[in-house]
Structures are given as structure tokens and as C-alpha cells.
Image 1 (cartoon, rainbow, N blue to C red):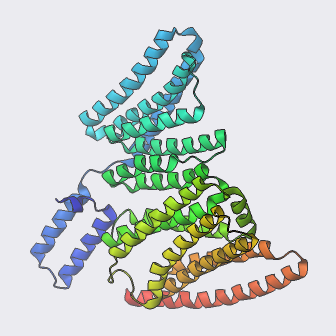
Image 2: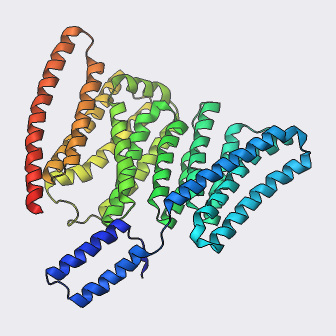
Length: 451
């Protein structure tokens, strides 16, 4: 069985088995070919896979055991000689790690238990950082303790090839970003490159969507803590664009690629949230006040924008007409919109650092954010109507509703204006609901005809 086939998900294999049956009915393949193909993919479907329920339960058990050991140490700490304390920490940690690896390889049917003990070893390592520092009066700021723990968990992730430990390291990298922000309230320029290098290679090595989800969420939340709230809009929008283009890249390379959905979902959420935050005029004033003459923060935005530009070029390189519609409007949505967001997300920070920004730019920036957000919502409605995707139309509707709510708080400050606004927006949404109901019936009818 080749490498490419072994990466197919169980859902994809079930779809293939159904397709093979249909191919025989349509005369595309003969009965012998059908049996050969079904035998090949049924063997893959029946191959042993990770029992995630057992793995989760075992990992929870290991976590509870680790907490019990830590509490035992804490309760009896003053009564234990110093040498014995150090020996207990090192022995329990090493025994958990080595025993977990040995048990996982010796008894593959109980792989989850072995993974749990490896996980326990990493938990004990983290507790040992602070216990040893306390025991020998080593002065260490607590954010660095999280960093050392994350580095150790990352090393064990690759040496033990363990998905649970990888997810733990993801949490530890995020904890480091949060602790750093709380301790020093300044930008953490090391977080993004270190966390990305620690998490993403393992996700691709294991071809694990679960690990990728963890890495994307870690980078999403961690970057916000590591860069500060006043550049949230620009970080979110450029980060979202990078993730979306990465999803497009994987989709263009292989239509059933399992990494496509995590990238697209997290990227879309990040992009829309960023544009929505930037659509508020008051936020733009905060942004300008917090980033003036701060080239380091501008550099972070520039790095994300450069990544987005590279991913856009790669996505275009693998563009396939059989995957994407070729009409003019779709080309604008999928090719021009990313470029507009990239230019916009980098232009204002650069203007701020060069001292070329006044109050008019804050208004212009808020208007551009609203325009891009409206463009995104309208694009979803168009693509949903064109491709018969009701989910696109529903999400576009939610974005329009959020825009209406945001502009209500932004623009109107007396009862008469608010009354008129509610009447106009309410009437538009009633009409839109009528139109959407008609489209819903049409799309459902077309789907029934196709079936």
C-alpha cells in the first residue's frame, strides 16, 4: 500500500467504496476490478488506528496521577532530605518516560497506556522545574519556567513521537505567551517563530489534523497575547489571510487533504474578527496611539504580511480551473481580495512609523475595514448562491448582522437617529429574510434533482 493511500481518512475510504460500487453498475469497471479495489481499500479501513477514547482516558488518568505525586511532594517536602527530593523527582520522571516508551512498543494493543506514562513524565518534568529552583534557591521568573517546560515537551514530542505530548507542548507554548504578557506587559517577539517551529513540523510529520488544530489555536491566541491588544486588528487580519491561503494551497494540491479544513476555518474566523475589530473608529485611534514609533510591532505585522504574500503566490501557483470557478467575479474574490488585505494591513503601520498619520487616517482606515468586511460578506453570499452552498449564505448573513450592530454603536448617539436606523435596518433584514427563504427553497429543489 503506497504512502498516499495510507493517509486517506476513514470517511474518504467509505466514499471510495460506495463509488466503486457505482462504477461497476455504470460499466466503468468489471466485477473482478471491483473486488480488487474494494479489497484494497477495505484492508486500509480495517487497519489498526489510534483508539482516541482509550488515549484520552489514559491521558486524563496520567494527569491525575501527576497531580497526586506533585501534591505528595508538596505535603511532605520539608520532611524529605534534599538529596532524596532530587532523586525522587529524577527517578519518577525518568521511569515514567522510559516505562511509557517501553510499554508502548512492547504492547501495541495497549498503546494508549504507554502514551499516558510518557505524558506523565512531561508533567513531572514541569513540576520539577519549580521544585528544584525552590530547593536550591535558584531565582527564576515564572514565564521562563513555562518556556523551559515547553522546550522540554517539544523535545519529547519528537523523540517519543507522541501526539498527547505534542498537544501538551501546544498548551505550554500558549501558557508561556500569557505568562510573559502578564509579567512584563510587553511584546514577546520570540513566541511566534519558536511556537511555529515547535508545533507545525510535527503536525506534518504525523499528518495529524488534531495536532494542526492545536498549533493553529496556539498561534492564534498566543500571538494576541504576545503582541498586545492595540495591534489585534492587524495581527488577526494578516494571520487569517495566511491560514486561508495555506488552506487553499493544500486544497489545490490535493482536494481531499485533511489540513484544508483546519486552515480555512481558523483563517476565516481570524480574518473576519480582525476586520470587524478594525471597523470601529475608536479602535483605530487606540491602535495609532499604541504603535507610534514602535518598529518592533510593525515588524511583527510585516512578518505576517510577508507570510501571507508568500502563501498567496503559492496558492496561485497551484490554481486549478477544475477546482475553482473561472468566472470573473470569483477570480476577483479569490485573487484580488487577499492582495487588498495585505496592502491595507501593512500600509497604515508604516505610515504611522513615518509620522504621516493624522485623525483623517483613522477614519479612512475604519472605512476601509468596513468596506473589506462588506466585500467579504457579499462574496460569501455570491459564492453561496452560485455554488448552492447554504452555509456560505448563512455566514454572510451573520457578518451583515454584526456590521449593522457595530455601526449602531459607532455612529448614532440620539434617540431619533437610532429610531430611524432601526426602522431602515429592520426593514432591510425582513426583505432579506424573504429573499433568503426563496433561495433556500430553490437550492433545496436543485439538490433533490441532482440526487
